[in-house]
Image: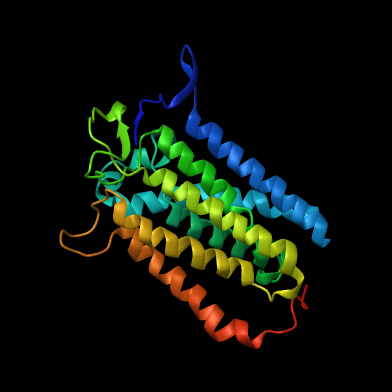
Length: 265
């Protein structure tokens, strides 16, 4: 099946003011993420005031990390030659790996400042991440960005008409959106049944393992050339290796020895 993507990135346009699909979807993903985690906090008896505080840090970490990830991982030559473009996030260019690093650093800073154990809220916060990721990837689809490689047969894929193309590509944005839908379903199902029986960092590690493993596979269909020609992996795959190893290490070395659930909480 062939689908022609000729969507305008602008949802509505009034004179000089434009509301873009990506911005609306990004805001929607953040909002639903917050509402879900707020529900989890109340269900588990965590103070909602802590969530309101940490969410400010996480939002800033998300934006700064995502932008700097794009700058240093994917287009360093362009941005270092045009440093003013770094702050122009409305021109596009956010890295999910950079966002992950930014979230981690922001949460670490918050726990240090408020003297909270890193493991206390890490799992609850991880449960909301796939929701934001779903909306972001759909936004990428509306923007006709982060394209897949040509689908080859001509019987399957998406033609991104706005880019002047007349051949189908793999809709990798939608692949990742579906990946995050599946991950959210797995995490939420496991949360509802086993949250208090699982040890700290279980859900964060499970998210890392599922997402970055899936991301590693999907990268084979992405049309990205940011590493030396002939190198067998993309930048996204290289950046996914460490999270996969950390998550695998948790389940192999840490998880088997933790049998008491969330005693420290």
